[in-house]
Every structure is written in structure tokens, then in C-alpha cells.
Image 1: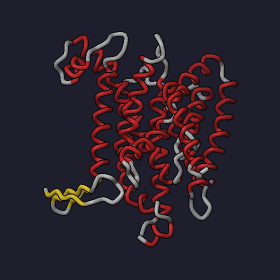
Image 2: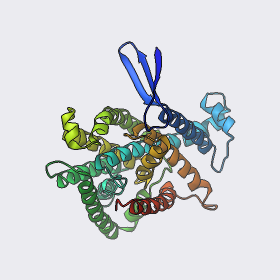
Image 3: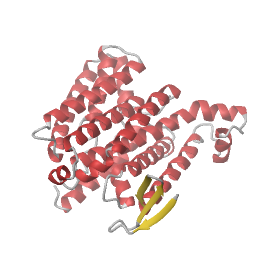
Image 4: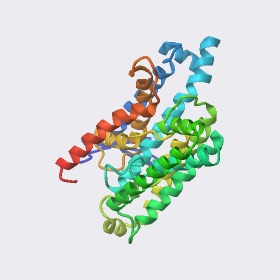
Length: 355
């Protein structure tokens, strides 16, 4: 394998090019370092989170249990009770982070994230219909969330179509769809009986409580299929940022690229929502923070996924430790942190003259 370095103007780091035969991998050194750091932070946070709870376990003991060298009692707590929850947190955070980066790139707008433009509300509407109307099981609720998110995504895409899909139109249509779906969800909650309403409110808050391996495997399979689809679109997405005319001239099928990206990102968001409920603001904040750290001018899909995983693990730890003696759902923690970030982002966009 041969490694060469080339200057990368404006990236602050320089390009790293790895060659082995006909295969070459090119990346920015700073972005690669940021990815490595975020991966370590996410994994270290996962170890700390596994040891957090009423029965506290030291990080070294957690590592011993994970590697098969712990005592039986700790092995049961670590592997059967807490590890599935943390794996779901990592996967949900990564899925939301990558989906948010894809949506923000397609819309060319930092507000173009799934929870702002209605896809999270669509998943919630699908889940609420199953809970309130069909009295479905937890697996049927997850299926309803996926179906609701997919139908909402297709509806927003079609409504935003006018000789193509453009950024602000997609965001505006999505915000309108989010408002309508919020009203539908409120109506369903009002009409539900007490038991169904309580169950729906718990789900709508967004929580990792009680997650086990039954939630891990479907989400892992979805990420294994959909994340590579988005990564394969990253080069074309980077070209579309130069404008549709330029992208067409360079041979990029712009609308096909956008449609595949939107469908994959919607499904990724819906699967994450089905696994943990609507977790707010991860999809909004993770891509922005990742891009600022990596100083990447292009589509920061991998850094955004790793940032999302690290943020959700940190938020879950905060939900267990930073809100007094009682534990709160992780959706509350992300809402508190993300609301402040959204306010700062709106002020920054206004000062920059983009709003």
C-alpha cells in the first residue's frame, strides 16, 4: 500500500491518499482525525454509560465483562441489561446524525433536519395510529413508525416538487407538514383512552429504557443497508452543492441522486424513531458540529454519524445523572440541549443575512 499526501486548499489539514492496486481512498487528514476522536469519545462514553445506574460498575470492570473476563453477576448486568440499551443509543445517534447531514445537504439549509421538516412527526403519527386506533403491539408500533415516516417523506418530496426539488421549498413544505402532523398527533392523544394515552406519551418522549436485543438487530440491519447507500451518494451530493447546472454538466443525475438520498435518509430516520421514539435535535445538531470540527466543505456523512452517536450517549448519561435524583427520558435531555442550540443557530443565520 502506498500513502501520499497532497495539499487540500481551505481544509486546514491536507489530503491523504491511500492506494493499493486499483483501489484508492482519499480523505482530509483533519476529517480523519476528527472521525477517530469522535469514535473514541463515543466508545468511551458507551463504557461509562454501561457502568451508570443503581448498580454502578467501574469502567475497567465493564471492559472485563465485555471481553468475557468479568464475574457472572456483572456479566449479566453488562451484557443482558445495559449493553443493548447502549448499542441502541449508538445506532440511533449514528442514524440520525447521518440522516440529518443528508437532509441538510439536499436542502442546502442547516434547518433541513428530519425533526424540523416533519419526518419525525410522520413517524410519530404512524406509531400513534397503531397505539390508539389499532391497539397494536410494540413490534406493530415500530412498523407503524417506519410506515408513517416513509409516507411523510414521499408526500413532502412530491409536494416540494416543481421542476425538481430545491432547498427552501423542501424545508417550507416540511415545516408545514410537521405542523399538520403535530395537530393530528394531538387529536389522537385527546381521543385516546387513559391507558393508550399514557403509553403514547411515553413513546413520544423518546426513551431508551427497556431496550433489548430485539430492538438492536432490526436497527443494525437497517443501518448496514441504508448507510452504505447514503455513502455511495456522497460524491454526487458534493457535486450538486455547486449548483444543478454544474452538476448536470459533470454528468450527475441530480434528481435521481436527491430521490435516493431522501428515501434512504427517511428510512434511516424512521427506523431510528421506531427503535427509540422521536429523539429531538440530534439530526439537527450533529451535522453542524461535525462540519465545524472537521472543517469539511463537502458532505460530512461519517463525521456526522459519529457525532450523533457521541451526542446521544452523552445525552443519555446526562438524563440519568444530571437531572436530580430521578432519571428522565433521553428525549428530554436532547430537547433541552438542542433547543438552546437551535436558538443559537437561528441567531447566527440571521446575523449572517441568510434569514
